[in-house]
Amino acid sequence: MEQKTPLYAKHAAAGGKIVPFAGYLLPVQYPTGVIAEHMAVRTAAGLFDVSHMGELVFTGPDALRNLNHLLTNDFTGMYDGQVRYSPMCNDQGGCVDDLIVYKVHDTAYLVVVNAANKDKDAGWMREHLFGACEMEDISGRVAQVALQGPKSKQILLRLLDESVLPQKYYSFVRDVDLRGIRCLISRTGYTGEFGYELYCVSADAEGLWDLLLEAGADLGLIPCGLGARDTLRLEAAMPLYGHELNDVITPLEAGLDFAVKMGKEDFIGKNAIAARLPVRQTRVGLEITGRGIAREHQDIYIGDRLAGQTTSGTHCPFLGKAVAMAYLSSADAVPGTRVEVDVRGRRVAAQVVELPFYKR
Image (tube, rainbow, N blue to C red; front, side, top):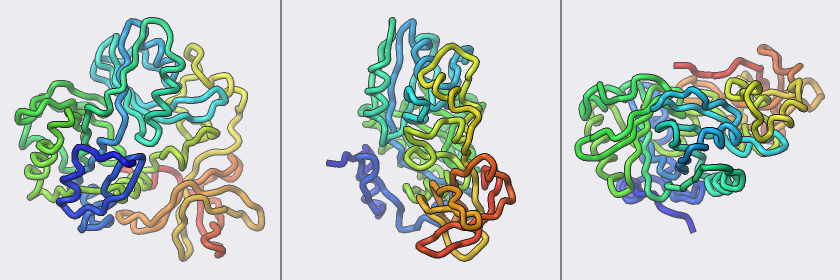
């Protein structure tokens, strides 16, 4: 039985097309349509319900040591209010998930995980906890919305003073009073655009949603669904678990080496990742140059040789062309390499390009 986010009634009232996703009922699009929602985020602003994401709180003197053991990135030296991205690996070096960590203070961290993996992630982390550290799943008490797009700041400044907003990318501010609603506001994003995430208690979610939409109505702000979220993250070449990431792919193969600190103390999967060096395959971008649209799990050929498989693909509205992400051998992953994608039995021409496809 799928759950409903605290904003379900708002989506239904606005005509959202509701679909099951990651155990929740969420809008895939509104009557405006995916293309209009995508373009709103690129040119004005869009508002997403991401209350299905998981929130885990690590507390105690050994919280930092636990995170550094569980995750591939290094969280030593973060300042209070800083956010850091990281994969989380299994013993074989594959990705259990990717997530972001918010440092509240030296003995408290908020970890935000993907909705589809929330229970798996929480179980994996709890199984590997040690020392003076506790983990609490607060997902059921928290709502989260993402305000994304170049006019996001202008919209929030109608409700807040600039001094209370996070000033740096991958930072956050706690206990912000937004017209009587207490929020945590961060700047991370999953669209490739400037924007913010706002967390509040579930009971305040509808009020926050309405406040933001009203504040941005004349600036082009519209609610957006899962469809636009996926096309936006693909344009920005952001990996999605179950597509570019899974229990077999290592974060180095996925091109996430910036978040893998092999020089720090031992972490889960470190030895397995080292044993799989040098990397034999890597995540690449494909620009479709022929007639057709590549989707996920489609074979890629170089001549008659099966060279790899796509992981995600679609037509990107802002770019005006079809693109895909895929895994190819390191030898084939050279920008300009010409390939063909098998689209329902028909070979469609494409070429390897650098990622991301879109950069703000």
